[in-house]
Image (cartoon, rainbow, N blue to C red):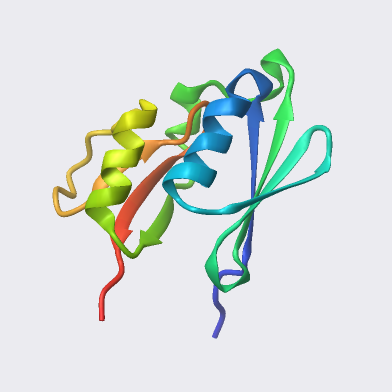
Length: 119
């Protein structure tokens, strides 16, 4: 039996750095670490980390191609409040057949599902 590990790595154009940081820090409540100038690590609960490498121009997939890759899920305590924060930050919603959850796209990055904590 296997499980997913605690680390995720994303590669995003550096022009999206400020909105990505705002998404993780302000909407998802993560701690921001900057171990190197081109890398930020966003620490979430349970030792989960999302490392974002910020690269120049054509080194990252464009947002339309990012949507074709793996999608993430972020579980939050207060889903309505997180939705409001994401909306205030201008994070793009993504339409998907699952209408029970809200889907968004990390600026310049992959799609994620926002889920409320249950139980």
